[in-house]
Length: 487
Image (cartoon, rainbow, N blue to C red; front, side, top):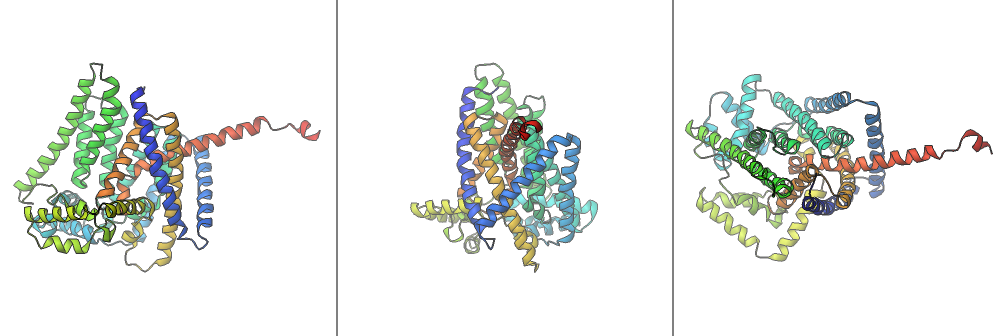
């Protein structure tokens, strides 16, 4: 039972979500039109057709398929499509992915000196993922296809978590809508051939989130499991602090405030603190072990805390990675001097308030309206322009469809209120969107938070499906009999 205060908070979050989804729909629709020869007309017709097909599939799935059969079907689709992709598209690691994979190959051969090279000295928090890859390589060999198969398995696991989380936050029908769309979402499929740390981290972060909403840390060992999930996920990709803030905000707004006059709030606060302590302990133990064994000379932390913000405020690259910024900061020794130079440049970029405001708007348009960069990372330099064009077109239609369903969902949630579980995902999505207004922005970063979009949009799909069912019953009820038709 959600309290009046929490219900007010859930509605406020939904109103903010409505604004975000309206923004997504407006700018993604305009962007999608540019990928079709007939412009907006084709995009609208294809999106409408996709919506009808999805609702018909959802109607059939809820009416004729049991839970086990549906999950088996979704997993078959998700795994099958991704296996076909990784075995037919030979994506070679580049950029950061190449540095991490090279480090993994060295570690698998017994050479751990990679931890002190220029890349890992600067970005020590990437060592955890490199060691994960090294572990897989040690067990199964050096062929990158094995790591890609594990990407497929982690995405399949995330599809199940999306289903379970949505069923908990909304309904069984919503869970099916979310899982089905997640299984066929083209950027997810394409990124499976990329050796990114996002697949494994997304799985464990959202496993932790599911544990939170499942029982609200009421279980005896839930706090330990959540702390371990977030702690391990952070070792793969450094987003643990963000998810911890989400955990604390959720517990305070939807668990502690409603029970502030009851004695049980103290136990809940203690379990929340316990989850945070476990998370921090995982980081400290990992850093201690790697420093003591000589893999790295410094803890697994961000050695350049201003870098992401400095890059995110670069108007010349629209808040994206900058070669010029990289060359500039590398002339300074790592440590206080480089951090000071980055902070000074950051302050300079904040002086022109108007330019900063325009940059924020431009970044938001790109982050939530532009096409996904999955095709670029996955297909890379392979000369397959027609394939890339078709995949981007499909992605644009899927994205606009998600935005439409999510907009409906947020509107209904703002009017009726929403469960605490549903509000958790809105809270995370809004926080992530706000964060990327100021830090480095890439459209592939959407994959880290997009399970929230799939979960939230499912409610909009369910609302439309239920409206269709009610209309269908009305039509049957008032359909004239054969005798009446003959009169």
